[in-house]
Image 1 (tube, rainbow, N blue to C red):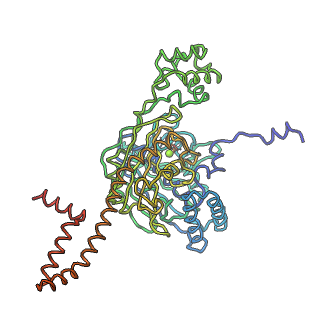
Image 2: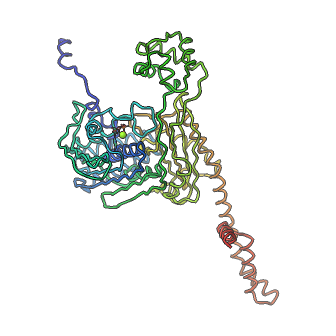
Image 3: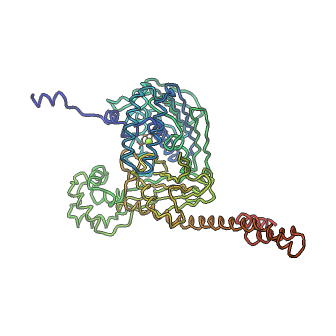
Length: 572
Ligand SMILES: Nc1ncnc2c1ncn2[C@@H]1O[C@H](COP(=O)(O)OP(=O)(O)OP(=O)(O)O)[C@@H](O)[C@H]1O
Ligand SMILES: [Mg+2]
């Protein structure tokens, strides 16, 4: 066989959309339940990002309609059960078991083929809208968007999400996605489109313009190979958690069984606009530095270091170049070795740590109010740590909240269990639990120190949100945070601080329980004692019994009664 000829015949370049078409599981489209949540996640994060960026209080409506195909057959039921088992194995960190179940699920799904559900998903936001000329790019062109090239805290990062969902729709149903969008100019574009995978661009099937005074974006897309159910990894749970982490958003969900749930905003305050940050030298690899230099508008390397990176003064830039023995030349001509030398010198000088003003946490007060509304627990305490850095140069911040009692924790077939809610840049992470540093950090805390003897079975919800312009995800699926020492340390510190209040609260409950037991024991014997005293003193035992009861109740006062007395005293 002639190698040249064979290469000429077979060799060709593959486009990004073509690649992901074959590898959709990398984007979260694997399994009938995960795929559903991924669709909702992609569209909702886009809506939230867009609203926030334009200073709009988000109103997002998600409608899920079952349009048949989802036969309630035994296979589906089996699939649901396996999915539940998978969730459990994942959250318990049983990796091998989870892998086995995943293979089983795949097999059942293949057997079921197209009889797995067929749904229409509609997502509408009141965001800024998308200018018509950008619609084909947003929904048809992978690796394009307004976020990837900026160093800013946002939910989306890659410029893939929207196209991935449109692609999954057309691959499972063959239908185009309908996009209605208006920037508030009195007109809305109505576009039916598909992804042209070869060109990495949308193919417009139909396009029209209507008059309207509405502004925002509405998407209608059809999907097959999905299962809808309310579980720990469902769109319902995803939106519930999104509502907790985004108190300024109102989110409505219409489920296939016609149930409507509205999570109303608990705050009318928009989070401050996430500021674009410049990367800090210590957060960069030599390759990053070389790439940035080549894209820079600066004429000289010193100008680039000072202008395009964070915390580098002109004096520092000169000093580093001199020590690194790199000439102050055109940034276009920087070599990989130059970049390595420059970074090495940056590590040897004292640089201020990166600016952190671009980090916008939920904030303690908002988070507590939001959890209170949804979990209705008596004990809720949040803690927003100060911003910090990982790998020496990437800013991040951790927020933690612990809720005890009320609806905290989760209901499982084995009863009530503690629950860990993981978030990255305020977006819920529902999959790959066992692989996530947030999960392992929480489990590594010694909860006994905080009077939680049986952590796994406690009525506890532990909420963790990690924010950063660059979340250290474990993989492109963006569902698990990588084990980074600095990040893990911050999470543990945050929990420990909240833990101290939790300890006081729980020991209060223990004391109270003890009091209740003591009081009921005394009350139980009161009639007998009164009877005996009455006999000895030959008097009516009834007043004696009343006196005894009165005395016991005064001496062993329960917290509720004390609170009521204090309240009466205050209002009197
Ligand atoms: N609902 C929307 N309203 C306004 N602009 C939007 C909306 N949805 C998407 N966009 C724009 O389309 C771009 C592409 O979206 P897409 O989801 O593909 O990528 P991304 O959000 O930038 O990153 P990721 O792949 O991580 O989601 C976004 O960067 C944003 O500018
Ligand atoms: Mg996105």
